Amino acid sequence: MRIDNAGSVGIGTPTPNATALLDLASTTRGLLLPRMTTAQRDAIASPAAGLVIFNTTANSLELRNSTAWVALGSGGGGGTTLPNCADGETIVRQSGDWVCSNMPD
Image (cartoon, rainbow, N blue to C red; front, top):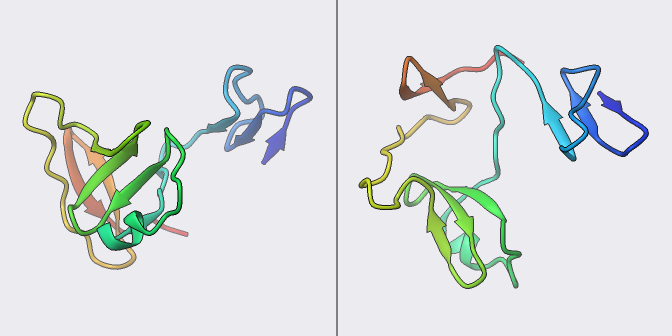
């Protein structure tokens, strides 16, 4: 992990992008966002606009706008169906499809 003089944090890169607060680089791992049920999501007091979670009840990536939770990928194209992965598995993009994968530690 590297923190540069401007406060950019880089994980997996010695030179974090200056326009990013957090720059993650990997060819073998992904970003694992907080996972929670709809009830747990709805229990977040005053969620900030821009907050992102993976909703395990709806099996969808969700973004909080200024007034509501919005499923990402649902804007007119019918949305994206993501697989229901087992505990310990991560959803990754592989050959254009979303699949479950056991990511190494």
